[in-house]
Length: 101
Image (cartoon, rainbow, N blue to C red; front, side, top):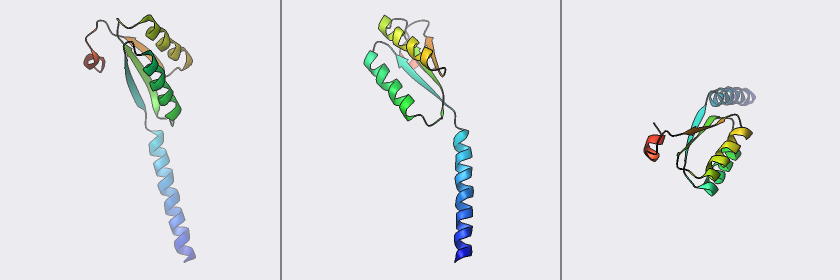
């Protein structure tokens, strides 16, 4: 029985190490579209940053050229605070579908 427990522990350790190495390989890019929803920008960014377990490689804030100046300021603020955050301004205002292309 002792040998069995030792074997199980060894297997569990190898499984845990394998799982950990696979998780370290995960790199997510998160795309957030922005227009004028200032409160939801804060809510979304707070949730992303608070729940990140090291997987988020970059956060792209794709902002409409017609967005409010407050929205631009909020996005620029997050980009200054966190090097993973980039602000991309759409050339025109084609809508949310084009933001993902």
